[in-house]
Structures are given as structure tokens and as C-alpha cells.
Image (tube, rainbow, N blue to C red; front, side, top):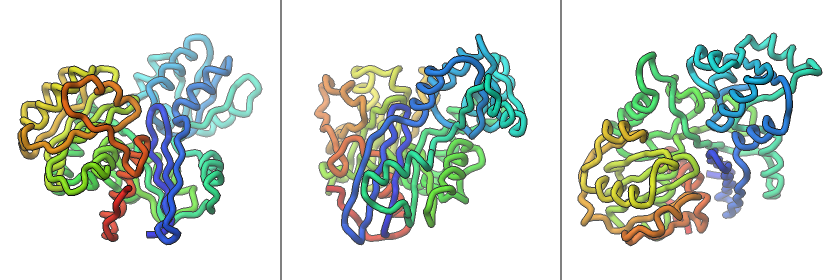
Length: 358
């Protein structure tokens, strides 16, 4: 390994980790998420919008674009419109226009339109962040994680479809890093991750990897020093938009669940953690509650769990739980959970020597 840039793109923040194993140093930053930044930009403008770019995350961004379309023209390219919905008819039903790249680019030059370019990765912004680290903007590897709901076939729930894509890989290789994809391996249905990889191609790097943010968080949390030398661990990451819990048993992913953070309480999470370990969660039941789903490969039993470790910017939800929850900090920083997971996934993928994140 040498110079690595890890980027975790969340709903609230973008977390950046630079690691150089030759110089034995790492630097990190937590900044406003791309979706939040663009949402605020839209809110600060008036009138018509002409939008190019690609799919990026963030339901607040979709909401503010739909709201603007009620009073002004919002014209998007097909690629950018995927941010609002993968079904173009759903986008246009909200009043947003979809047009070809040439027409939208022409509108962007008109004085009565505000021009926007959607992308989760902005080279200029990243250059500024890395400049603050005091290191060159050149990397041997860039790895990025984000939440991608996937483009499901017509009539199929995107949450169910995404879940089945993931579990198919995990059945073959039951480790979180199985969901790390090199830029030429990304499933076609993962449109947002595909878009991120294309954006990353404009960075100065030799290799590009992408990963689901939930799996990156699970792996990163399991790297916390409190989990060292333990066989059966239960990790929980409560992020701005999504909450994931997982059982790691002898290094393998035994079970996991995923919810929207706004839909869970501390009491509900406490129940979910017990039920996850005892094998009482079913995918269909979690979907019916509005969650993303659940998966069980092996039931370990709650009594076998040696530690419950929580990470994520909203982990305060679990502070009042009667369970003995340990507040984790992979590599000394709760906000680096996803980036540590990315780095560990890349390390495992490339077969490098084991690292300790202390």
C-alpha cells in the first residue's frame, strides 16, 4: 500500500481519510455532504434551474427540486434526473422537465436560468480538502462508499432488489468486504455507485473502488480496538439517514439489518439487536415496517455476543438502552467508521498485511 484516499459520502457529512503507509501517517476531515451542500445552494437561488451531472444521493435535494418546480422551470438531463427518481415518469409528474444534454447545457448559459451540476464527487472541493492535509493530490487508490438503492426492474421494490443483490454476494463470500467493487466490477443496477466511479476517474489515482456505505460501516466498526481478539461482536452504526446492525462471528458476517434512522427509537434498536442475534428478524417483516431488510446466515444467540459497539453521528439514540453498549471510535474517531471500513476492505482485497486501527 502507499497513498490512499478514502471517502464516505453520507446524507449529513462527507468523511475523508488520507493514509500513507510508507510515511506512516494519516489525516482526516469531516465536511458537509455534497447533497446537503447542493440542497442549500438550490434554496439560496430563485427562479429557473438547468441541471446536468449524474445521480447523487439525498432525498432533501429531491424535495427542494420538486418544490422549485411548482413555481419555476426545473430542467434536468436524464442522468441527473435519476437523483429524483429512477422512473422518468415519476420525475416529470412532479413538474420537473427532462431533456437531452445539449438542450440543458444551452439553458445553463441563459441569464434566466441558474446552472447546477450534480455529482457526489467534486474534484475542486476534494483538492481543497487534501491541500489542507499538506499532501499531493495524487493517489495509488481512491475508494468511496455511499448508499445506493439500485435500479430495480419494473414492479420490484428497490429496497428488496438491492437487498437480494447484496445477499447473493454474501452467500458466496460472507464478509463485508465482498461488497467492495473495483470500478470495472460494479453491478449495472448500482447506478449511483457507477456514477461515483465515473466521477472518481477524473481524480489523480491508479485504482478506484466503491462500496455500500452500510457494509463499510459494519466493517469499520468491527475494526475498533475494543473488538480486537473477540470472536462474536455486534456492531451498530446509526448514521444520519440509515441505521445498520450486524453480527460478526469469527470474522464472518452472520446477520445484519438496515433501517431508516428517522424510523427507529432507542427502544426499537434495543429489541432489534437482541432479535438479530437470536435469529428472530426476517427480511419481509423489516420491509413491512419500512426498513431496508434483514439477513441471517447463522444464528449465534444473544448470550454469545461479547461486545455491542455503536458508532455513527446519531448513536446517542442508543445511550439510554439497558444493553451494555460501548461507544466505538475506529482509529480514534467515531466519524471515520466508514472510511476505516473502506481502507480495511481494500487491504483485504489486495492481500496486504493486517493493520491495527489504534
